[in-house]
Length: 280
Image (tube, rainbow, N blue to C red; front, side, top):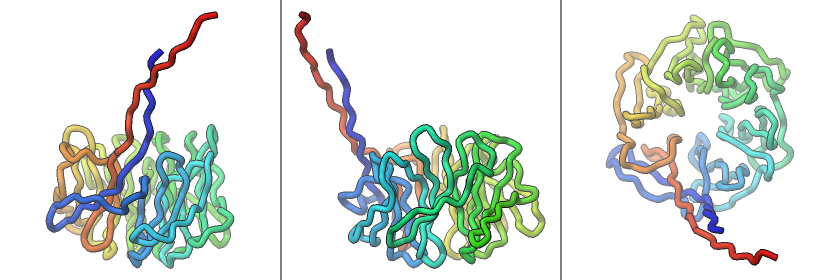
């Protein structure tokens, strides 16, 4: 009998927006879903292959494990003051919930209980600029809304007019929440004042994220025109940053310091094993 075995590993890569160069970063760390803290001094990421959440300094040193398998963590996000990390996660076979963990480790705190309405659970938290609330959503539920949890009171409420949105990203000035439409995965912009949505992309997209100054919204498109993009929400002017067709990178990316982006690629190995046995 011949058996194929795969050892999953990844390598982080940094993409310089000015030069267009893609170079290895954070040598020795295998992970995904990396995010830099607001001051650029720290990173949080999910380890590959075990799905544990880690934090480290920006150069990859002083690593600290924040969660342990079989619990699976996803998409960590730093609080504005850098003292907490929000993420969603679950044990095997259970729906996801939103959690908080202190930057220096300790007990994790569950802050949602399925309020988003999706079978997969509550996912993809985003901090309000004042650090007092988290927006979150779900996928595959067309009529559901973005929900917000007040971290002091624990009260959870739906945002009026946000039906059919998920993957929220609060703008730095608090005026907008960018997200994806459940139908078609298009980038949409929710205005907190008018409580209305407007469409920013017309194709299947993902991983929206704001620049620190709020002037640009970054996102990725998939399928035949897979690329990284950024759009200026004021005038809706869209710029292609880089086509991804021949880059062989993962289907996620995030912003990094020094005018760059961070992503990863698969570096795992496949091996064939032969098993011989004797029939009694």
